[in-house]
Amino acid sequence: MHLPRPLVIGVSAPLYRTLNARTPLRLQRSILERFAGLSVLPAGTQVSALTLGGRPCERVTVGASERPRAILFLHGGGYTVCSPRTHRSLAAYLARDTGAVVFSLDYRLAPEHPYPAALDDAVAAFQALVDEHGFSAPRIAVSGDSAGGGLAVAAARRLADDGLRPAALGLLSPWTDPSDEDTPRRRDFVIDSAWGRKNASDYRGSADPRDPGYAPMHGRLDGLPPMLIHCAVTEILQPQILRFARLAAEAGVDVQVVEHPRLWHSGHTLAGTLREATDAVHDLGVFLRAHLDAVPESKAAAEVPA
Image 1 (cartoon, rainbow, N blue to C red):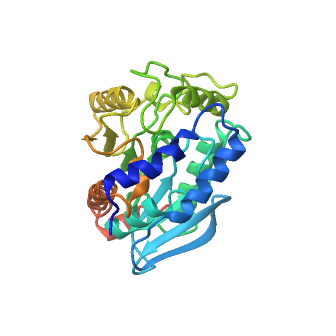
Image 2 (spheres, rainbow, N blue to C red; image 1 turned 90 degrees about the horizontal axis):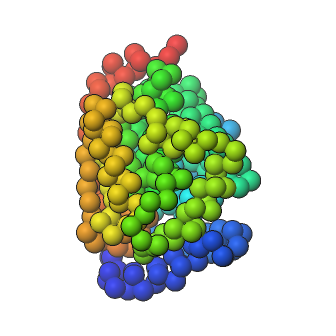
């Protein structure tokens, strides 16, 4: 029972307008958390709280609660706002369409916790899925939107270098170079470029803007898992996203890119409410499940570190 697209646009626009450099951060967080109460979840959704890698996390399943595959989901929000609650509908539809357990991580936010706090949290969470929850790395995918998409790439790089390469990456409007200010216009339906610059600065702290953990666009991309990248044709990050996709492909990564003409930046968060968002999450789910199931279960189990 999706809502008409014009109605969704009309309701969403005022919310997105609060995401600007002038609105106090505490107010932005409060508004987004209140709006999260309108999330629409698929039938059979189960959400439970746990600690993963030392951070709060939501464990989301649809149907059977025990699954052989997992997804570590990293929410967007410019590294300064949002939470598993604001992205619960996306996580739930992703759980439904992959038949996986989705672990939606509440990683530490800037400016209270600048880089590398979020990256450390993401890597620790993945490690905990292997060490404490019995999943093997080839049966875990990492996905995220916007800042969470960039964080997913940075985490995958560190994990791959440590011998724990995830099965695949699902990147929704990924922000892989936060300090890049070369945008085609000041704002799109969701993002205000001044807001993005402030968030980038708050998250970067004293780090080098080309540090690959902060901006994976500038790091080694070879050896990363297969990735599906979604972006909207109207979003101001589109040139950056396509540039990252090209660099990854040139490095030998299996890259698929889908450009959505009727969705906006991180519009997947409206899965269950907007038909285009639900369909986009389904597309992501099909991709991730194919890679999560590509390794036979016996071989995946054998790759769990002793």
